[in-house]
Image (cartoon, rainbow, N blue to C red):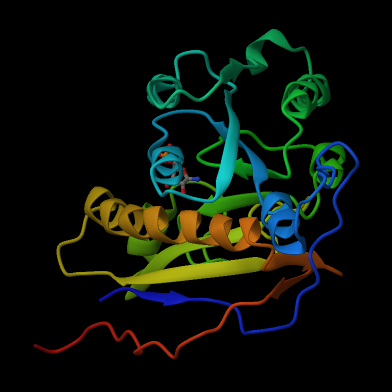
Length: 250
Ligand code: GRF
């Protein structure tokens, strides 16, 4: 049985907002109305391919405005899914840019057109420059298909099977300049079962990705999650979860 691990409960001040995204109080509007309005965060999702995490986010009924889905590949299947959901799409093709930093500059320009509060990497298969990451620090998150810090990089399910781990999973984290290494927001763990292949293990992990990524975005949207001094600050009431043991004798 999978187990979701979440941060401890901590008081959290609402992140300060820039002038662009700060709505003005209307005449006759109460504090509660105003607060509710300031909670509608704008999200931009970056993808490179299939887009199943993006789809889970679009279909989770989150209290957010999905401002756009941007891909670095024009052929990414996820673009069609986003369009079917009525979400604006854009392509910034990395092959059209001479260097990583030129691509990142073009990508940031495209992202900023949509004035996002949060940029969500959902299967975005590009290494980002430190300049790009620092521009969005605290409002850039990623999902990685392993229990970080184990198995950063590619082919995580193959590596998990090679190492013979009994428990594997996925991680949602704030992005920092070190690839697959940012402060961890949440993790879900699944057992590795006898006879697992990379594909069967990937499918079990992906099911959990589709749970914990929308959940983390909801926390951010509700003003309950922030990056402060390189640490996750979260105002999340946490129940104790049952331990996951693997193998688990029937
Ligand atoms: C997911 O496993 C995600 O964790 C990783 O890339 C994969 C993307 O899948 N970063 P999808 O495009 O969301 O279906």
